[in-house]
Structures are given as C-alpha cells and as structure tokens.
Image (cartoon, rainbow, N blue to C red; front, side, top):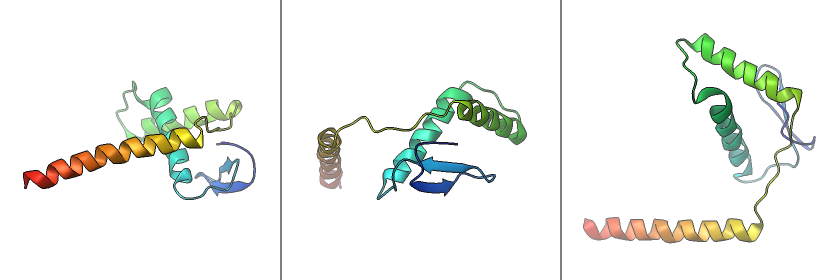
Length: 105
C-alpha cells in the first residue's frame, strides 16, 4: 500500500509498507487511515456479500493488489482557511447541541 513519498514510513500489515509523503502530526495520520478505509469500503466492500471471514479477507486483498498496481499519492485538497472554517462551524453546532442538552436537564 503506497500513500505518498518516503519521508514517514509505517507498516501496513503482512510486511507491506505504507509510505506517507510527510511525517504525520496530530490527527493527520488518523484522517489518512479514515480516508483509506473509506475508499476500501466504497470500492470493494459496500455492495459485497461475504458469507465468511476468509471471503472478506480475499476481497480486501484483491482490492489492495489492484490498487497497488497503480498507486496514487494522497494529497490534501483543502486549504488551511477551509479547514479552520469547517472546525469553526463544527464548534458552533456542537455548542448549540451541548447548550440545548444542558437546558433540558
């Protein structure tokens, strides 16, 4: 599984390597993992029917083999300002939910 360049390196199971373009800091690595599993789910698992764990493992292995034939680096497309605006909106929503919950008690 190749996700970028060669600065940060982590193992991806079964002796394979996951190569990250930059060293990951904070929650960036978690976002990368979430993105990977989202793509795996959308492309290989969502519409599948698996009657056993070995069938599921085979589907995942097939997806990884197919994806690794033409690996594409993961690149951030959002600017820092876009990310910060999204965080601000999330905090406003969370505060509204939290305040609403606190007044109901």
